[in-house]
Amino acid sequence: MKKLDRNSQGLEEKFPVKVVQFGEGNFLRAFVDYVIDKLNTDAEFRAGVAVVQPLKNGLVDMLNDQEGLYTLFMKGVQKGEEIQENRLISCIQQGINPYDNFNAYLELAEEEELQFVISNTTEAGIAFDENDRPDMQPPSSFPGKLTVLLYRRFKHFKGSPSKGLTVIPCELINNNGDVLKEVILKYVDLWELGSEFKNWITQHNSFHNTLVDRIVPGYPKDQQEEYQSRLSYEDKLMVSAETFLLWVIEGDDKLKAKIPLEKAGLDIKIVNSIQPYRTRKVRILNGAHTAMVPFSLLYGNETVKETIDGEFTGKFVKKAVFDEIIPTLDMEKEELRDFAEQIMDRFRNPFIKHRLASIALNSVSKFKVRVLPSLTGYYREQKQLPAYLVFAMACLIRFYKGEWQGKQLPVQDSEDVVKTFQEAWALSGFGETAGSILKNEGFWDEDLTRTVPGLKEAVTTALEMIEEKGIEKGLEKYMGSIG
Image 1 (cartoon, one colour):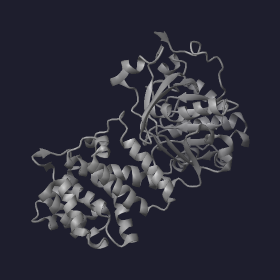
Image 2 (cartoon, helix red, strand yellow):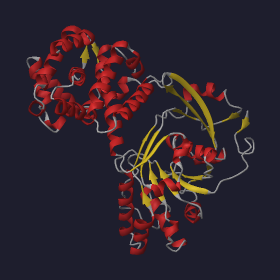
Image 3 (tube, one colour):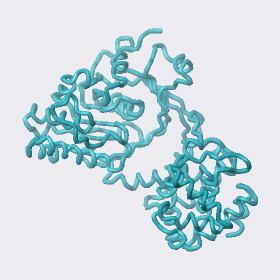
Image 4 (cartoon, helix red, strand yellow):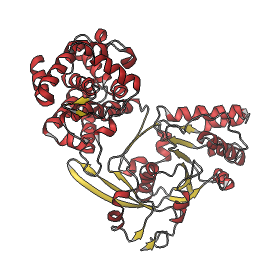
């Protein structure tokens, strides 16, 4: 099988470097580089990407060996229909390991057409390291490396306002652009790089908060031969991803003018604030995940797909999302319902086996952030308890007992949390157990027996029904008791 390179694929033209990308991993290659590649073909964006390896060991050598080329395989479900497609990604022009060739890294700062910096260096990547120094080749932290690059650009172009960069981090932390800017300014002060450089950073560079969402399983090692058989070349860096993609970026008309994201034909939004979209994702996608896990495991399912495909469990999840979570969100309801339908398609994706046990980790803290705000918000607005979310909470408490019908449950949490549940289940009666958990301010930051009237009694009833009748009959009897 022939080697993958630009000559064999008829890709003779090289684009100027408009994007410096920190990170060569699966996510950026299946997400950002896919978007840029589509813009190059669909909108004549003509943007080359220079990939910087943020750690000493990485994939840059393999990437350069294939001249920046690799195949993206996308699989998913859209409106009930299975979709499969693949695309040769060609926007990456070079890969640089700053640990091996620091000068090549600094030379990126002198690229005339450079406009963007994009990153995904994991949640821990945007951090300040007081041991970093400007003469290190390179500094250890990602923000330290970026500060050095920006300073080189500032000096080379003599502080030209037109040579400032648009920085779009994709790390999964809240306000990622603001945090990155703050860390860079700390380095400017620590390294005494001067007020002129600091003003150039703040006035002529822009930092944008983002929200990214796409499941990227990565290199399909379990299906390597099957995927490779579809290609006419050997690809050591092929990557798989779901078809769904969401990218929300805080920005204005200036950003829209710089990069024609709307022409990619994908769900990419430039908005004044990403917070409503972050809340939407946390409440609907993550909330549905967290609410279904104990409930569906107790029912006997093993995967998310089984859950959403099951007549009983699928109906439960949809009722919780469409009838109880969506009404609490302050966004246009049709848009929320469309988003929720996309989430249901993602849940039933036959190409991604998402085991419930693998997402059961730290379910209490997840429930607090992802589900509880919908439960309490529904109560405040509707003046009644959301039946399905309350039942999900009862399933959570029953799940943490650790066993069910003679089988061990995949409880994964800290020793303190597990011990608290053991002590609660040692109390006499379901009411005592429910009350002990619901009033635990260490779990919920509030005493739910006081702030949500009737919740203790409702959870107690649900626990009794679950123990007496099981999940399906228990839910039926519980709904009858409140109906």
